[in-house]
Image 1 (cartoon, rainbow, N blue to C red):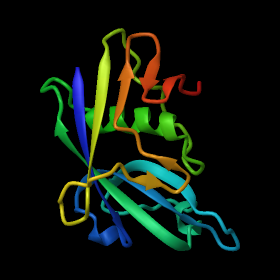
Image 2 (cartoon, one colour):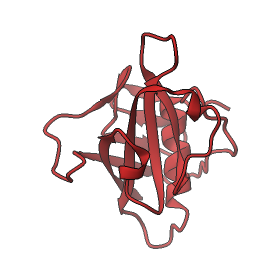
Image 3 (cartoon, one colour):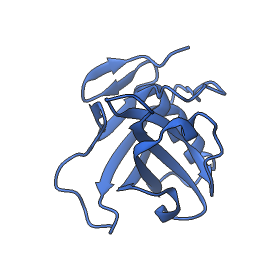
Length: 154
């Protein structure tokens, strides 16, 4: 099963991100911190009412994700993508709410990146502190990325 996710950004304001239910990532700086980092990844339904996200005061950057391709029989593709990517990036401000939907069926996530004006990016972008992956795979037992095997927490 292959799921293709299109990422658009970065945006400086959440309200510039496409409306409706979407997967949103946030990076930035807390007060009195010099280094920006990745803080949040989650499904946003119009607002990010998360008290920890409000602590990010400077250099906020939002990325918006749309599902470009997914199997027809997979209604919860945003939830699956959220769990897979959160386990990969391990955002500081996000508490895991449910287990990953680990099945014996192999899954491949392909990420494509675009500028806010929806033109393709020539190079893979980075959140503060790390490059965004282009492919993440589940082989039925282990998760794989371009950096090799990784195991989600839990």
